Amino acid sequence: METGLAILDLDMTLLDTLRAFHRVYNKALQTLCGRSLGWEEFVDCFCRDMLSEKAASFGCRPREVWRLFKEGYLPRREETKPYPGVRGVLSWLRDQGYRVVIATGRGTGEEHIWRELGWVGLDGYVSAVYTLSGDEGGGNLFSKARLLRRIVEEHGSPGRVFFVGDYWLDMVSGRRAGIYTVGVETGCKKRTLLLYSGANAVVEGIWLLPHILG
Image (tube, rainbow, N blue to C red; front, top):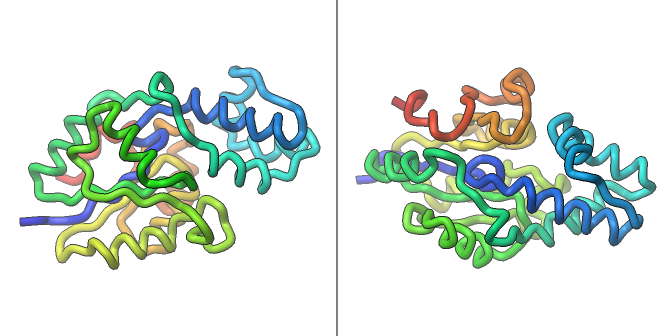
C-alpha cells in the first residue's frame, strides 16, 4: 500500500551534474555573445546565484541564455554522478511505500532523464518523470509550482506528499503548491536562503532525508 508521494528534483539533488551545467551554460553564452566562464569563476557565480548577472555583463539577455541552457541541458555519462547514499534513500522510500516522481527544471524530453537514471542504476526506483517544458513555468522558465500541482493531481495519495530540491526557487515553488518542501545544500545555496524562500526543513544532502521523515 502506498503511504505517500515523494517528488524529487534531479540536478544537484539526486545527481551531481555541475560539470554539465558549466559546459551547457558556456555553450549558451558562446552562442549568444561569444563569451565563456572558466570553472572557478563559474562555481563562484553559481554558488552566489550570479550567473544571470554575469551573462548580462557580457551583453547577453539572461532569459535567452537560460532558454538555450534549459533546452540543451543533456549531461554526458561522465558528467552524471549520484550523490552518496542516493540509492539507499530511494530504496528506503520504496520500502516505506512512497511513490517516487522526478520533477526537473530541464526542458528536454523525459526519455533523456530515463536514460540518465538508467546510467546510474536509479531508474528502477522511479515511477514517473516530469520535465519543465513549454510554458509550464507560467512565465518563469524554472518555476515548478504548476508542475508540482499537476504531479499531485495525477499521482496524488491520501498519505504524505513532499518535494525535495536544491534551489531557492524550488522552495518558492513547493510553498506555492502547498507541499511540504525540503531543501538540500548540495546545490551550494545557503540554508538561510532556502528557509527564507519557503523550505519547511533543510538538510545537508538527500541522504539525510529519512532522518526528517521518520
